[in-house]
Image 1: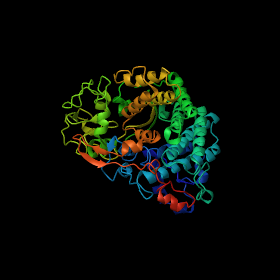
Image 2: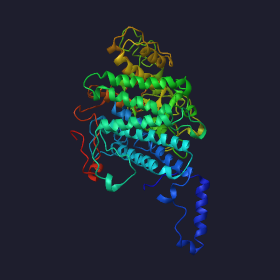
Image 3: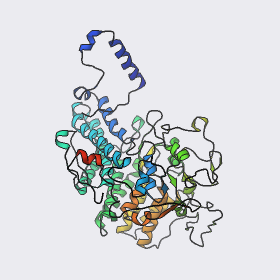
Image 4: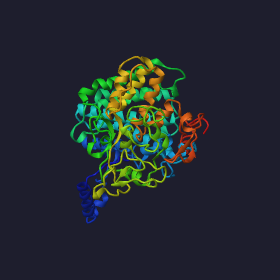
Length: 529
C-alpha cells in the first residue's frame, strides 16, 4: 500500500520520540513488531485514521504539480498573452509559452501527471478500505463524497491537459495496472461526471468549524458545470453542439439555485477576495487550504521579488477605461501620457504598474525589470508598507488559500453557455453585469449580437480571472491559442522580449511524460510529440 501522508501534531510527535527513546532501554522490545508505524492491516481501524487518509488526498492538491509548490498556478499565466515566465524555474511554463515542451520536459508536465495519479491512488485505496473501519454510516457516506469529488477533480486535471488517460478505479495493483493503456477521453469524462454526481448526493451544502475548506455539494456541482462547459467548447466540437452548451448552462444554473441556501454571492471587495484575512468568504466555493507553518507556498515571494509571472503590455491594454470603452476607442478618454488613469478598477487591484505605490513607495520604471509590471493578486503586498513580520517573506512562508472555484465563475460560465443556446435570454446580461458592477464598471447594454456577446464574455473572463490559472485553458478550449499566442510579447515600453509560438497541430495537448511511457509501453503519445 502506498504510504499515507499524515499531519501529526507536535504533541504526538513528541510522544513517539519519548516512546522510541524508552524502548531503547529494553532489549526485549526489539523482538516485537513496531507499534508506532502503520501497516496495511493496522491502519484502517478508527474514524481518525480514515480521516487522515482522506486528508492525504486533499494534501495532493498542495503539490507543485497542481495548486501549490512555489507558484505553479500563478506561473500558468506565462503560457498565455497575460504574463511572461522568464526563468527556467517556473515549472516549465516558460517552455510551454514558447512551444518548446517535449515528452522529456520536466516541471509541471511530468509532475501534474504524477501528482494526479498519486491522489487518485489514495482515493481508490480509501474507497476499498474505509468500510473496514466500521464508522457511522452517514459519516462514511459524507467522507466518500469528498473522495469522489477529489478523484473527479484530479481526473479532470488529467483530461484537461493530456486528453485521454488510463482510467483506474481500483486500489494500486502493479500486477494489473502497470501496462494499462489510455482510455478514450469521453470515457474518462463520463466517469468524472458520475463521481461528481455521486459526491453532490452525499455532501452537505455547507461545511463548518474544522471542516471549512472541505468539499461541499456546491463544489461538486460547480466542478460539474466546468467539466460540461469545457466539453461544449470549440476545441472538442467542430460545430456548435447545442445539447452540450445547454447541459453546461443547466449545471451552472443548479449552483445558482443553490446560492441562497449555500450563501454564495460575490464578495464586495475584489482585491480583498484574494487576501488571507478574507478566506472562505461567500464567493469561495472550493479552495486549496494553506496555513503557516504547516502547509505553505511561495506566492508572495514570486509576485513581489522574483516576478517570474510578470504581466505583459497586452494584458494592460486589455483593461477598459472606467467608462467601459476600450483604450483604442477615440471616445474612451484614454491618455497615453497617463496610461493607468481611469481604468477598470480590477487593473489596480491586480497589477503593480510603473508609478503605483507598492510597499510604501512608487514603483519606478526599473522596479520590476522584466516587463515593468508585477502581479499582486494572491500576494499580501500592496500600496502600504507590510507589517514588520511580513516585510520580506521567504520561500514557503505564504499561506493564502488558492481558489479553485468561485461564484463569479459560475455566473460567467452560465452566461457563456446560455449565449450559445439562447442568445436573447436576459439572464446573460444579468450574470455578466453582476460581476462588472462589483467593481463599479458600467453594465453591458442590451442589443448585442450573439457574436458580440461571445467576445464580451471572453474579454470579461480574461480580466476577471487573470492570475487564477483559468485563461490558459480558456484560450485552448475556445481554440484561439494559435491566434493569440503566435505573437511578440512586450514590456511597458513596448520593447519586444520574445516571440511566442503555438503549434496548432500539437500544443492543444501536453505530451505524455517520457518517464511514464518508459514505465508503461501501452501508453500512446499525443500527436506530433
